[in-house]
Image 1 (cartoon, one colour):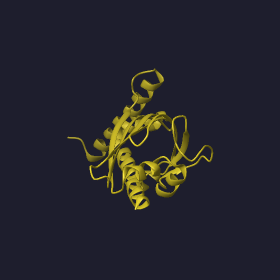
Image 2 (cartoon, rainbow, N blue to C red):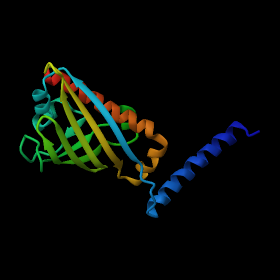
Image 3 (spheres, one colour):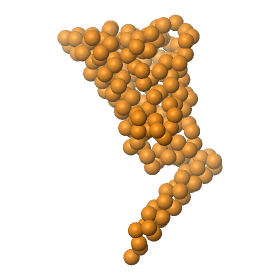
Image 4 (spheres, rainbow, N blue to C red):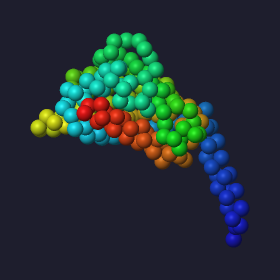
Length: 188
């Protein structure tokens, strides 16, 4: 029967071997890329045009979503096809102790007024973000649905994603929850 120290040592060796294997797969061009397909839904007690405007205005974004710190100053206030924005994303405190804020750059590739936004995301994350809007029948509340299809571009953080996906998910959920709360306050 293995002693406690032997068991922990074996787990540590297994973890390191997994990291080395994931890294080798990346270097060899393998399919060790970890992708994230996350969906988040917000319910905002405000009419759709108010919510949509808050989400497609650089100035408004600065006010209601501090975890998604807008770091570029160029371009028109209104975000539309061809617009681009860059963010410094402040992660959940538990994750922020381990890793600095990451940066993403979003290029708006498809915009349907009051219905849909589609962005190509590059930087520390790479992929696509699609945001859908739906107003309730009374016109008093808006559902906002975010579909993230991304991967982490840093090879080390990508490899760690196989072992700490729950931590990544917690950080994502924390940023999104703060955004929902900020948007609700802003729209009211």
